[in-house]
Length: 370
Image (cartoon, rainbow, N blue to C red):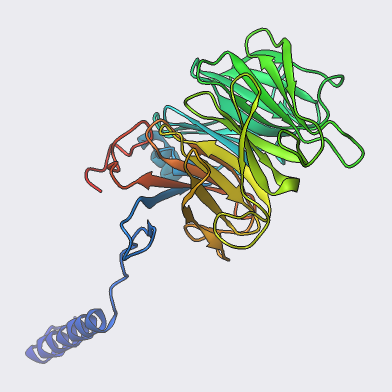
């Protein structure tokens, strides 16, 4: 006998649908909405905000867009898009929306090309193959300088990653950990950390084009102009050289000709003091940014060495401005700050409050407004 839909069935299904709809509405009403992430600002209120957390960079998909072809292959062929990224980052340099990060475990320089939505790696192939890249800087001429601690050399590439030249050798360099280029792109400063049994705790000055050794600044010691385990360097817009003197718990500044200018900082646990210095950078206004691994933050000083503010603290989970092993730092042409954390395998990006999200070389052009 064929199945017959009766009035009784109509009433049953209408009641069931009504009950289902009521349950769905009740469920929606009882489930709180997911709170929208609000980027933290620094310093925290009630002080006027100076910087806002913008994003973190860890993997290729932080900058690369999934194309229509990618989506088709994933849907039709079951392919997956392999994400690449950071394993043990150390140094960072920003240049026109391209963020260069040395990775000592992968033996490459990882490039997050925010400006073009691309990801790439530098230094895998000969010539120009890297072994233990540490310090990194990009000159105003668009040349990428990388210090390799194992090779004890400086390798130079263009911004696309094409190898250009190498200079320095084992007779000159012991443990080259940091590099910095002057504003004209003509002089390269190489920080040689030295070692326990060595007095070669110094900064070597090279002609950035020919690689000729021009000068050596400092030696092992505690006096002005001397170093104990120097680690990283940065050059201000006026040509002043700043060096993190880790073992002496201070930053030292030198005139462009190598003469000692000033020092600031001492050992301690309060703002303006240091416990374990690492990275250093300068901004277009000449302020100095210093990473302290023990504090899990970076402090910002003016050109006279006076503390302006600090950002970050030690913390688990890799949340914004939470760090366990912060290392390198850089500030780009627009004032965005890039800080590396080795433990959380990330680069945190902070934007000046006066700069909109879509503005600048590393701006997100899909966003308008803060």
